[in-house]
Length: 322
Image (cartoon, rainbow, N blue to C red):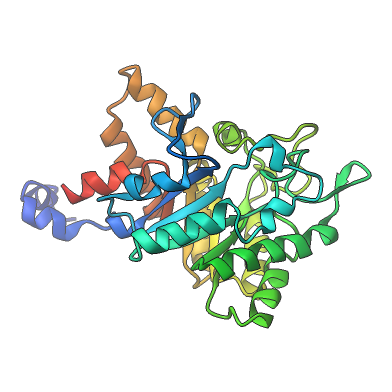
């Protein structure tokens, strides 16, 4: 048995300690979510997510100035007048997300653009697809998700991220993108998206809470790890280029097992409730915010994630750079 002192000699030497780290976190591991609203020169605070704002397209340049994150994930938050049961605003070539894509491309061409593909923020009922006879109709929703993805691809999105959890959504989107010569547009599938209570602050931010019922019929039960792996591998077979696990911190076991089953890159989403827990606890003085954020992110990376979607991306990039 090796004497314990040998490990201390490594840990006590700063240069050797860095060399011996098994898992490291870098700026290029981070993806920043952005909520985009209509209007001009407006930044709306989100009470349930202190430090996070909804911003108008004209503020994107200022918001991204000097940040070192390599990628953003864009969410459109249309006003109530743009919502309907057949959400045409989701396919508008001059809508929120296409305009945001053009702006990011212009002011920060070095940043990769990922766009959320889901109808919940655009429907008047808040569900992720077309509601027929009181339930979400999977097959009627697929053409609309594909149309939304094509709209974003035309605008210049590098990757589209279907989050509606409809069966067959990846295959449907891939077919439409390829048929319109967007073969280079990648797909990040929300492959293992659980029906989590930790999405509450996000639904405030995106104004996308269902007006009735919930999304448990098309999101995964918290206890179903094998179903999550099965769904992710199905999405891989349908043509997904990336797979995602959401939420991240409470589902590290899913990330770890999926890492063993696929060679695709895996993203993990540190969701709004996970962010809010850390933020409110640190604001009260109960936790050291910077240390807890970095520990939480390294744990997600250690589980097997290649990239982490987090509302702390800007701050974490700053801390890592300094």
